[in-house]
Amino acid sequence: MKNTIRVGVDLAKNVFHIHAVNESEDIIWQGKYNRTNWMKAIVKRVPTTAVIGMEAVALQIIGLESFIYLSSKACDIKLCPIVPTTHSK
Image (cartoon, rainbow, N blue to C red; front, side):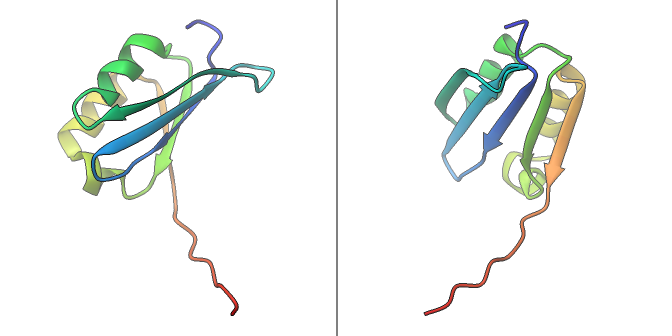
């Protein structure tokens, strides 16, 4: 999809949620993928000019080899730190 500019990946144990937007912040594509198919979906649908954002724990969840592969297919991957929140009771 040529007009995709930003993709967010929510990583979990077995199911990954992907959310892509265009320049107007309109949702272009979103999906729920298992551990073996999510990267194929990104490589197939996301242009190399898009920014891909995911949690900083991505290396632990997807592994270094998968991260390097995705980095070679997508130009800009941003790892976002997880900020702890406090909940009041």
